[in-house]
Length: 89
Image (cartoon, rainbow, N blue to C red; front, side):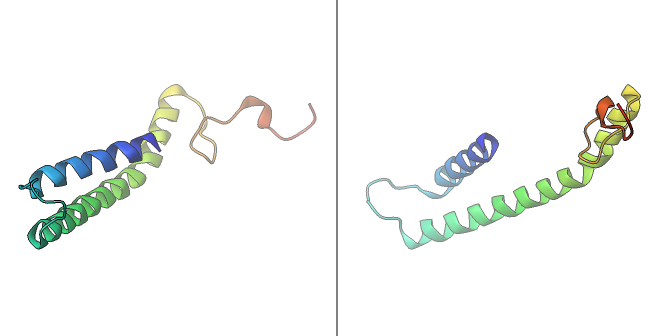
């Protein structure tokens, strides 16, 4: 949630600084509004592409990290716990 809010705040600030030129009016002009829509859409698309790439790379990174540490990775990508083995205790 924190990361999402940081990205949202950065996007808002970047688009506002880029698009809003005149602070003398309470409402946005049509040009400012369309600029903000375009700017936000561009950044959202870029964020989706980055997240897609991240989601695609994470399993490989977790497997490589597990192999380096010599542990078997569980289904969640985290090392399997030693007491999760089936059988009598």
